[in-house]
Image 1 (cartoon, one colour):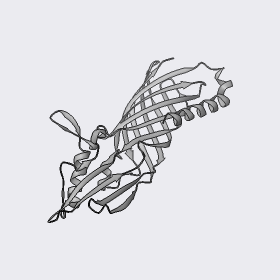
Image 2 (image 1 turned 45 degrees about the horizontal axis):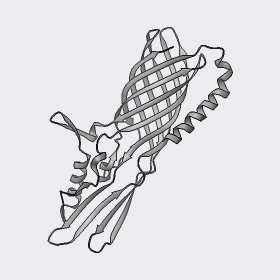
Image 3 (image 1 turned 30 degrees about the vertical axis):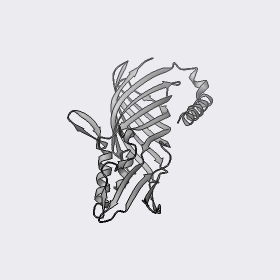
Image 4 (image 1 turned 135 degrees about the vertical axis):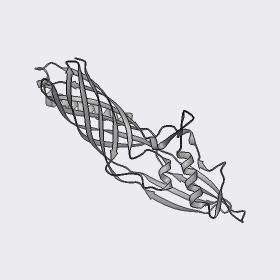
Length: 270
């Protein structure tokens, strides 16, 4: 992700300097910091409603918090840097005042439901091969974009266009099976290849709100983001005695459109 972000920042810096460098000399600069919380509502969904969905540290509908820093080098134009971190309550459950993950248990249950008629699912080894990553369901987004600024004494509207990276994790899992009325044993394993999954994202958006005073604004954000995934899950069903295996592939290559809506505050620094 570091190389990609460096390229994005460099590209925007060059474009901004060449396009607006001369104009910036005629106007006083202005810095703004923004904090907000909101929700990501899927327009198109990545998850397919199968047992493999439990291997994603991702959910189509999530909640997020975001921090932003804006610099206006012209009375109308500026650059904004955004960091957004999201999580989904559906990937967790709370028990005895302690937040724990439930994806591993859901994965094991799905294996028992699929294979329970013919096989015993060994409870000691079923589920994730390494469940240490079952902690958050986090989705991260980093953006940099250009802003057009329109303001009155009390209200403002900032149309924006940003590019960035969306990042989330996929896990790999395993379930060991013993055939009923037989000594034959099998293993079901899942792998998605590269992780974390990082995708270039395009995001037109708009901020608008009310100026409480010169240093504090009430803010609302709406953003439409797009990225294309490139995930293929491999499922291997292996006979542990003969070592023969059958492989299936599950395609998660999709165009993902998400509507993000949030509210928060803008602090005028200078």
